[in-house]
Length: 272
View 1 (cartoon, rainbow, N blue to C red):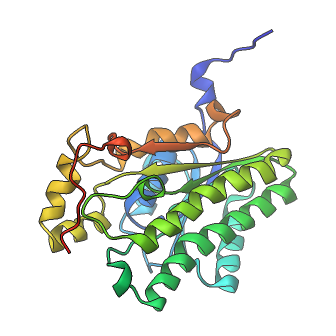
View 2: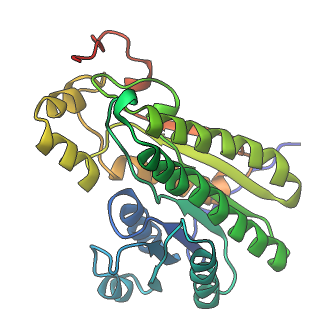
């Protein structure tokens, strides 16, 4: 017989504890604030010395704990120490969101070994071992949990006017990683899913638009919904995947692109 629960309770994450990598700005910071607003405690990790948001005052506003721990996802020992600090702050951990990442818009033939390696180290290896550290924490706790990896539209398609082969390769790896780990960790009650954003209005994409005004038109006019996305457009998916509402969802990818990932009615010929 089918069972049902109050829908509001399924999305209730108040009192739960989460870690967000890349939490100093952009998508990571937006997710930290959303979780805190819903009553969850959060530790944000990022390589920056300080976040772009005053987490202390917002923690008081929401009546939760929001802590910031500096972390370099490419430093094995440092990353482990940062996560141990987060575990000490939070105690029991219920979930992880991996937002730490960088992008590179550059022709394939011009991309250097160092640039490609740095992308893989941050976007793939950093995600891999952040997830491993939290999965081990779940094992120690004797609990399951939810892990959300931030992939990208570039794991689905090639963007118009973009030359991002190294970035696309890294984000394709992240999306595939979520599926592989969902299968491997599912027996322990650990769910692993991904979110694939399209063009999102963040510090990173503003730099791209400022450097190349043509990209402003590409980002706002090519999606079928005819606008660039906002970090707010991603929050519902993140909360869903971290909450009990998604208790039977794993190995999934939520594509949030304004329809761009299936849009074929543009000329994506590169001006090289």
